Length: 541
Image (cartoon, rainbow, N blue to C red; front, side, top):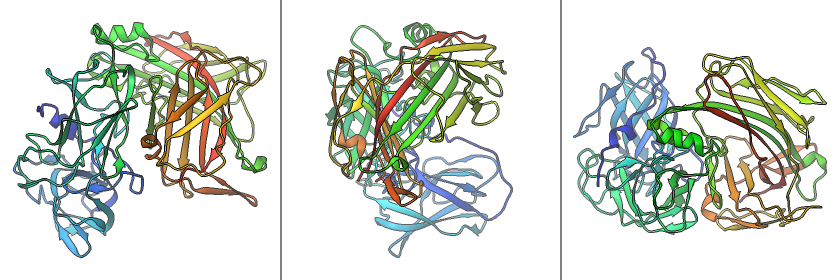
């Protein structure tokens, strides 16, 4: 049971340093899942590694601890108090804006408080929920996208160019299986199974043959499993249920025997093969989306609609192929509270200060603007006040060039609405049960193309939210969303429009149009596509 990647797993993302002042806590999360407090599975398990975010939490330069750890590191210590009992988490990394620490296994469960002390200054208390088990899967991107899973026996990282095959052995890394069986949380762990977790790989429930601490690092859990038969794709979901809750959902790449690359990435097989050959790949992905949903029994004021345009520009190397994350493979679902499941790529290539967006014969609002200067993620939204996407129109997204991507023009001829839900979804939907959906193709024969089901659920104050996406096999007119996927969503709140209350949950169904390719200096390739989604406002409970 190798821990070769353990240091990689525990290296934090570092932002700017800060000057000395009283510590202030802004959030406490599982170090792997990064699920916001209050979301399903967000509790901090006894013995787990957790992360404290904030300001003035520690020194201006990063400080790492070494085994055996102690309860203080570079002037930083922590206190957790639950039901009148205090324990002292074990810091493994401290910095001005972030602390990684291990919650002592004897910490009582329940709702409590946490404080940080640095150089004899103590923060105000912040809430923490301690649970017996709540697993988080490590990913390179704060808890979403490709899971950090090794391929046994060479311990290489699973990616779209280093795939699993059925019956291969995988090693999944995470934290939160529960309290240690014996020994101490400060030193090399005692090996042994902790609890009885269930894994979900694709649509298959899997019992791992080992699930416990790593052989070297306290707080770090590894789960060893066999890849089940009948699973295949670049983006196959993987999750762990422990302590009654499901972890963040990552993905793994699985292919048939005889090949080490998968074949269903939106980048296309040519670019995947180029990555596998040892070359870098830069890829542009543009999506135009029209979404509308109606809640049965409500007037139009209770409808939800909006048109969107997205563009991401990303560079991948063979070593960072795990960051090429686009959607979910056919037959499966993923969910995330932190990123759009349709496109979780790194989007770090600057394509300019804005992208123009035009349509023929009408003129559309624009431009697409980056989420922050120099980023490779561009976005345009038009809400319920109007539309800019119409079926069978020509749309062009173009850029004058930026630091990494040159002049380009990408044109899409939009598709049409192809499916409409016929299932009754106007009653509360239990998140603890599978949900089977049906649909029809009004005025058209059954379409022999994959469809996409998506949706979200938000709390009334919009502080908790989660999104999901499923890819439906071609030719189907029914699909079941597994309960373990739905269980990761928060319960739907309500919003008010005039005298009408409506739920803050949505289920959509639609089809991504066949992508059109485009080229640009600085890009290995690019595609533009669109989808028209129709659905219902729903109440996930």
